[in-house]
Length: 380
Ligand code: F6P
Picture (cartoon, rainbow, N blue to C red):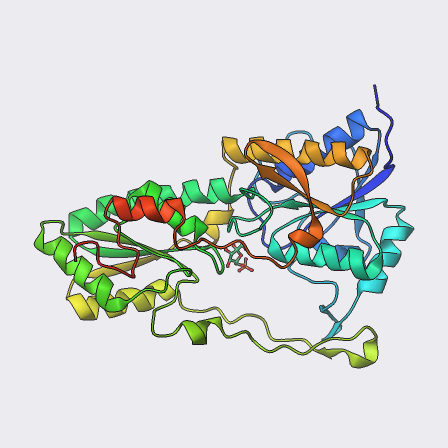
């Protein structure tokens, strides 16, 4: 039997890079909202772009049945931001249009599933557009504050760990150094945890700039001590000691005002860059004379079925979201803290990146098992 609720209609969108668990989260929110609270659930396609273009679908219980284990997102996603959206060759602020469409669809609260960017965009929509929102923390990067863990992270960690395991056997056979590049944007959570789980010999993360000479000495010493292979797990955002300032420099971007007259030209798409692992492998091969190879895991880490933990986390977060929506609790992110799902004010989360602290217990453990973190040689 349906319970009384303060919310009649919700919209759900997924935004930013996809990850395993999105469908499990959509299913959890929608099933609880429909079955328990009799809410109308509207799915918005392709993130904030779909909201601006009013591409919406009605979600019923049947539509979310059988999607717990599927990867990707049934709604589609995009990286578009409302206040800087490419439209007709120009970048425009489409917030007003989004607000109109939320109202047109009689949505009481917009549930946004996404990472750090989505937290900011949802908060902005609330602050500037007056729309009630709720978010769930999704990303393989685990860099959203206000939650112990984000969904998608556990699955990506397992994929990266499996890859490191496989690289071990081939690196051992050929007595090589293999540099494995792992995603994570500007943080090292994914690389650090999969590097520990996979027993990587060197782990390089953005939060600890690395020194080529340190890594070189460590690799040579390992060889002298009889280990004729080494696995280096490197985060895509890792930076050498000599260039942190350059790497951290923020790109200056044109500010976009509200009306179309101030629209700016659309920026060209991202250049497909060489993996940083290639540069590292090349340099270390030169410095040590040891044969080196590169593996960049890339989007493999975002594909396929979610792990048991991610399915469980998504179900917990999604159903908690529905419970909060029924009570009329809005403008929060549903976070996970020490086993409990609870709301965190969006203003305490938006725009704050959760980074690995230099004294994080994971770093302490890695060092205690002799892993080189790129800043100090464990043998020295
Ligand atoms: O935020 C998730 C993430 O996979 C990051 O780890 C990575 O830097 C980025 O997205 C890749 O984005 P895209 O799919 O747009 O290439």
